[in-house]
Figure (cartoon, rainbow over the protein chains, first blue to last red):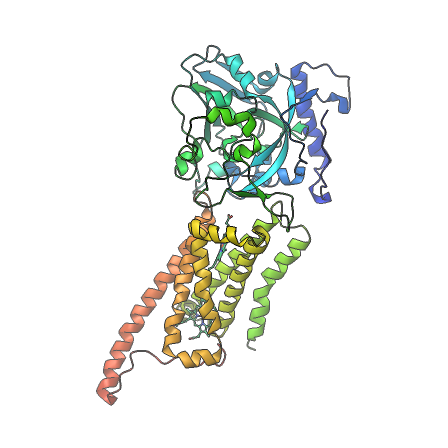
Length: 312
Length: 218
Ligand code: HEM
Ligand code: HEM
């Protein structure tokens, strides 16, 4: 059961019924693929989900804010671009390829990809490198499960992720001004990727993931800055060397490979000591940012011996 | 009928009124503080650009907006002030230690802050009395507007991730206007030295600079 107080959502931000129903249908389809038995019809058509014990008790940010304030440069550089332009992205059928240094490489249809797992409600804090934050109720599966299924070989040390390239539907990938090299790529050390907090999200607020949030499949790493959370994933590859990552390529001195939330290491542009809490209105005070975004108890062990100032 | 300068001020405050309206009606989106900061900063930059365009507009297009110059300049200054106030009050909750550290440690803020500081002497000396008293020195002082415009463009470029189109376009416009300025200045110097030579021959009086224009309506 999911427990959280329903945030106040202004009338204008309430999702239109049609969008809501179709999203639910998509998630239900995922549930169908899951093989979860459920009674016919109505709300009960939603798949069973488990609540992750990693979830925070903090009140989630409103659905309206989560779906209208996004950094997703495939659709444009403004935060309102993804909501305005991501709607046209075709997310079914969707193929995810898992390959590289694994004993069981495979290309999956999305439904088959998530079929073996129980979807979990994971309410995580989200901290953007631009010093703002949200609390987001994701629906997803642990990345570790997917990697175990692929059975990494001993030489595999890193995981590389890749976003779809489809300029016809992703307007940020077309045109004169290209802000990043496409495809967007991200990477993790294998032990980071195996951490139980590392999540592949397919849903938001109990519904199928909206396109502007990275549908149909995105990475969620609550202890890292948001740009590590690669969206619209089509490829997961196990590799031996540290893979290139998009923002690090773009500006190596500004965006590290690790990108762990760290209030002590400033970005050249933003102090990372505090964050603006989205939804707190005009007079909400900034909140102190926590080391590893408050997930230090879980993840700090991954980085013992690493100089977090040099490896930012 | 000539448009009174007051109308210029009224028009100049429309974006502020519109932004305030959006602010109170929940129309600035998920991150209203940043959006407010952005909109005020963008209008400040647009007004700086408008201020720099007035002379070229007259010389190249024959559009005479000279008498709005002071209004446009002051409006730009007000928007910069409001932009910085939004940052200090709403974004940083007047945490002066944090504001100071940010201005010192983050180049785009240092640059924006210097821009703001350089506009202050212009605003302070914008009255008729100061202009008359300072004479040609006022002109020299006023050259700061070119520095401010350049600083503002760089501040904008550095405030964003990667190289999105908008700040690049604004920077290109500012660069164009500054180049335009340099060329006009060169031409003027050539003309005035030529005419100075003529003057000297006929009257023995050297006037390297043309006299300050009338400030009746400026
Ligand atoms: C801070 C407030 C400002 C005030 C009160 C102000 C006022 C004035 C006044 C009264 C003049 C004299 C008119 C003349 O000589 O024809 C002038 C000239 C000028 N102003 Fe401003 N202004 C301000 C800021 C700005 C800004 C921000 C810009 C553009 C970025 C600007 C651009 C100019 C230019 C290019 C001139 C002509 C100077 C010259 O030819 O040497 N001013 N301003
Ligand atoms: C000449 C004076 C200034 C001008 C013309 C100016 C203009 C701008 C512009 C155009 C932007 C980008 C807006 C956008 O992305 O749409 C911006 C951003 C910003 N400016 Fe200024 N600004 C000035 C001075 C200042 C000062 C004095 C401060 C504070 C001390 C300041 C703080 C900021 C902040 C915090 C941002 C947003 C950066 C971010 O978090 O993304 N600016 N400014």
